[in-house]
Amino acid sequence: MVAIKTPSMEFNKKGVHHVPIKIFQVNDSAILAVYKGSISPLDILIKYRQKLRNGRWSNIRTPKHIHWVVDILMKMQSYEELTREFIEFFIDVWNSTTPLTSERERNSLDPEAILSLSKEEVKKFSQLSHKGEYSVKFLLLLAKLLMIQEKTNRADAYMFKRVLDGLKEGKDLFRILATASLVSRR
Image (cartoon, rainbow, N blue to C red; front, side, top):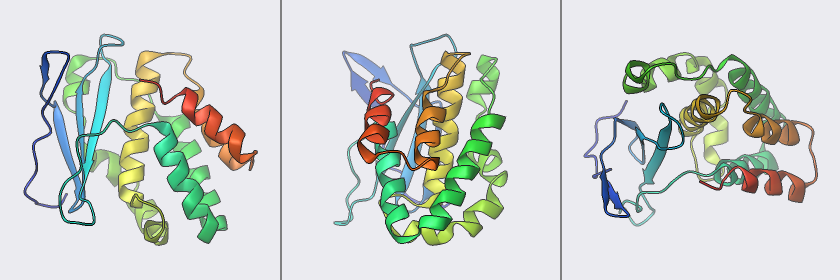
């Protein structure tokens, strides 16, 4: 990843201090961090910061499905066919993603390994980085982490896939956003 001065990814919530297990410097304007979650024994909590247009870093944010869905819809406005291929790729990633099975596995999540599986796709879909808020690299890493999170917490997970299927099928915009909003409540 890119060597940049990393702003702190530690935060306090309800009197508890949270320190990341891993920090992933996606590029010079995006950082993802993974923390121990509380939904299941191997749950992961994902947070990120973006460098804003004014050069400052955003507050630490929790990514929601609605965020990446809106970004995909923005990309689709300019690059419809390429975005549809990107969605197909996400569906393939979903189908091959497996849940975490040990604390060791959770603690050794590796962004380079996740992205090395997708280097060709990062290059193939790089044009999509010119529209929306997120780069293709950020979306791939974020999506993979969200998929791992969902499948780790529920063996019968399906909401992420349901959102992808809605995008693929070109469902009504409001139906897609409603589905994404349902899975964004964390």
